[in-house]
Length: 418
Ligand code: EPZ
Image 1: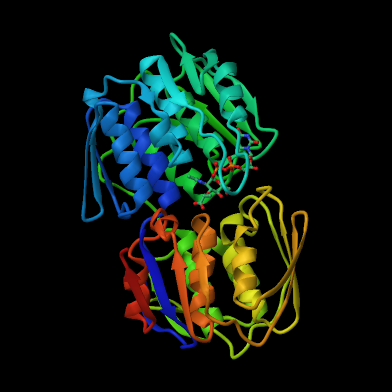
Image 2: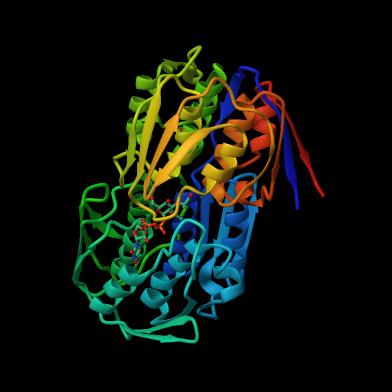
C-alpha cells in the first residue's frame, strides 16, 4: 500500500487548480442510466471513486471511458441491473444506481452498503421514498431487490436530511408518472448540480437548493451532452485549511467560494485572509490562528466533510476550540492520530475539545477514512519533522493528484509505493 512522507513546517505559496467535485461526479454519472445513448460529462476528476463508478456502470453493460476530465458513458447497452457487494462495499455512493435502474428498467438488485468507518449510514430513507413511489422492495441476503412497472409521483418527507437520498429520489422522480415533492431535501451544491444536469436531459425540476424540490415526471430523457460539473468545494476548503495552518499564501484557481460560505466565514474568524484576484481566490494564513468553535450541520451550514481539516487547524491555534459533529456518529477517527502528533484533544460523545499547542511533531500515522486522511496531510504540512501517512488509498478516493499539487506550492512531500 502507498504511503506519503511529508516534512512539514514550511509556509506553502503558489497556485493550486481545484478539480471537479467528487460528490457531483458520482450522482451525475449514475444519471446517465436514465437515458439511452452516449453521455458526455466534463471536469470529472481522476479519482478512485470515479474509477469504481466506471467499473460499476461497465459491469451493468454500459460503455465507459474517462480521459483528460471527459467521461463518456454509452448507456444504450445496459443489460444487467445489479450492483454487486464487492463494488458497493468499496464505495457507498454505488447506491445511487438504485433509483435510476428502477426508473428506467423497472428493476434493480443492489447490495446494501454495509457499515463504514464514520457511521452506520443506513439507506432506509432511499428505500422509504422508492416504496412511496410504488416500488416493491425486498431485502435478501444483503441485497435490496426493487421492482416497479412504472414509478408514480409521491410526496416524500425526509426525517433526516440526506444528500444521496435526495439525489436518488430526484432521479427516480424524473421518469415517474406524475409529480413528486421532496420535503426536507438536502440543499448541497452537488444536489443542485445534479438537478441542473437532469434538466439539461429534459427533466422538469423546480426548487433544487431549497428544502422543497418539485419534480414533474417525463416519459423519456435525452443523454447528457457536454455537461461540466462544479469544482470540489471540499478540496477547496482543504487547501484553505492548508494555507491557514502553514501561514501560507495560496491562490485557488477554478473554485467557487460561494459554495462554502460557512467555511470561509469561520476561517476568517480564525485570522485567515481571503482576496478575490483575477487568477482566483487568494488565501493567506496568519502567523498564528485564533481558536474558534464549530458545529457541523447540513448545507448551508459548516460541512461535516470539513470537520477533520478544521480540527487540525485548531490543534495549533491560540486558545481552546469546541467542535460538535452532528451529522455522523463516529467521525473523530482522526483524533487519535492527531494526538500522536502532539495535539491536545478530548472527546465527549459527539463533541471534541481542542486546546491549542505551540506545534505538532511529525510521526508515523494511519489514514482511516477519506477526510481523516486529508486532515493528517494538513497536520503533517505544519508539523515539525517528518510524518509518514500509511493507507493513503483513502486519500486517493477523493483528492486528485494531492501530492503533485502540494509539491507545486513548495511542500516537501514524497509518495512511496510499497
Ligand atoms: C453524502 O453522503 C456525501 N457523499 C458524504 O461525503 C457527506 O459526508 C454526506 O453526504 C453528508 O454531507 C456523497 O455525496 C457521495 P447522508 P450520504 O445521506 O448521502 C443519515 C465524503 O467525504 N441517513 O447525507 O451518504 C446518515 O446516517 C463523503 O466525500 C439515514 O439515517 O450522507 C447520516 O447520519 C463522506 N438514512 C445523515 O443521514 C438514510 O437513508 C446524513 O447522511 C440516509 C442517511
